[in-house]
Image (tube, rainbow, N blue to C red; front, side, top):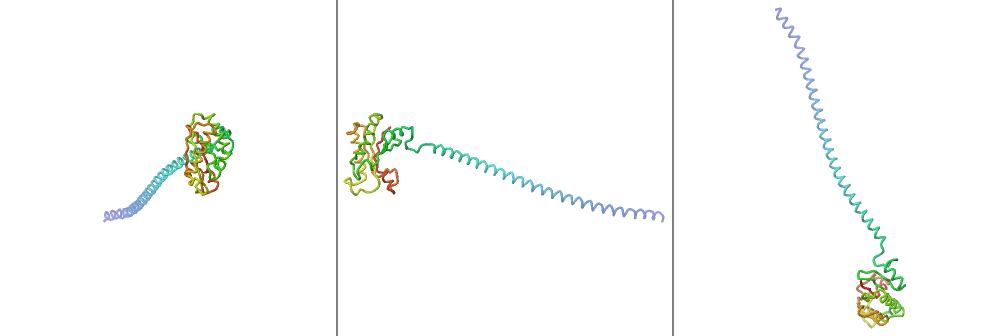
Length: 240
């Protein structure tokens, strides 16, 4: 009986210890579970951050490509600006400029004769308003005077060059002229100029050719009086 009592006492002493140990184990498991949850949350957050980083890297690549494209576009625009600035410093195509051959000719010939550089050669432009009577192919005194200056020039400086005499008109229909059409009027005026260069200025007719263009090669708009006046002309083209 004494032994049993002693054993029972020891057993009763162990039971609280087991209960305490069981309680500790439960709390430990709870701590482990909480830690696992925290670890999982951190992993999830890490994965999300890594995804954000990849997105930012992708956006950076896109931005770099955009920057590169814009830089190339800016370089292209800078090149265009440079070319435009150079073009602005150049004389207008065909116009006589000081120091050029055309400028020298314009100075030599004086007012009333416009000088332009063309692909085919040098054009000496005689306005019809001072070269001919209205609707006529008869040369005025002013026209004859201008042609004498051109004849002197052809003999002195361009002796070996061919010469094309081209007549032009505006688009206004012929009403008070015996020539009937602008094409014929332009041809007759060019012929009058060529014949004067031959007979009045001593230019070899073998050097001359005559062309009538009518209204089909305007240099200005025919919708205005000034444009029509500019289109009525004869061009003495000193061929290259």
